[in-house]
Amino acid sequence: MRRRDGRALALLGALAWTATCAGTARAYHTERERATDDTAYTMDGGSLRAGLFKLQYSPLDFATVGTYTLPWALLAATVHAKLRLLPSDPVALALQAGFAYFDSSRLSWLDEQAGNAVVTALPLEAFVSHRMTDLSLSGSVVYTEVDVDGALAMDAFDGAVEGATDNLQLTATGEIRLSRVIALLVHVRWLVLQRVLAQANARVYPDDFTTVAVHSDVTGGEFVVRDGFSIVPGIHLSWGEVNLRAGLGYGNYNLPLVNFVLPERTLIPDFDLFFVF
Image 1 (cartoon, helix red, strand yellow):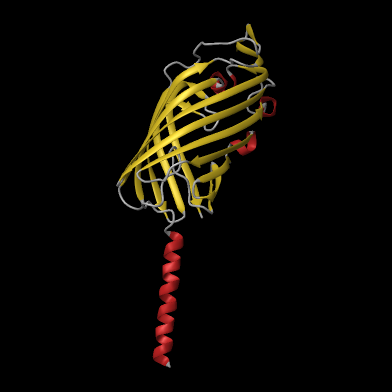
Image 2 (cartoon, helix red, strand yellow; image 1 turned 90 degrees about the vertical axis):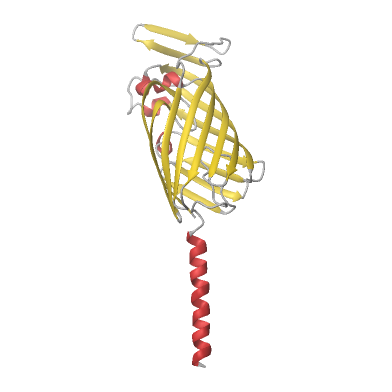
């Protein structure tokens, strides 16, 4: 009996160890687990991502829905969804759509001169990703439709409003996996086309002495941000459910989801801490 009891305990211990490893290994860099930011990949069905900047859930292997947390949870209402159209090996295709809504008057504590405009943004993005063993390459085309209704100062929020225009951008992302814990990343973004408040009912203030009225029957084609680009290399560390991304790049910073491109080029920090369950 003692020998059988010992075997039973050993078997139970082995099963418990296997279950623990399977549970904690789901977010390591493996062939099954892929980085979902800026790629065509989605999380496994039933997975939940909770982090500093995003809250996402995948009801199915090929679909993800979510919202932005910091700082958007305090400033605006946001939602986004991604649908993967092809299996992930070796090529994956996906479409993503989002929506953001905020009232600039509610942000007066950030900038008293911001105005009282309602701003909505609708980004649509198409992804393609190709995996080659430990190297993955991804690219996307993203078009963002922006609508502004009300009075808005162009230099509000350190110039971020200057990028509040309909725009088309191209992105490219490369990932090299050095181990199941460490992956090196580089993300490139280029502002291709921009249309200035093409369909809006707004009053903008380029300076203290000038007021420009823009109505729905007026179209614009001037560039507010010229030759906008950014290059951000970084590292992605994964320890089971815990993930850390960190990097530092240069260029015109792009506000996530709404895709407002800031006019001034500067250093661009990249940091995120999130958990995948």
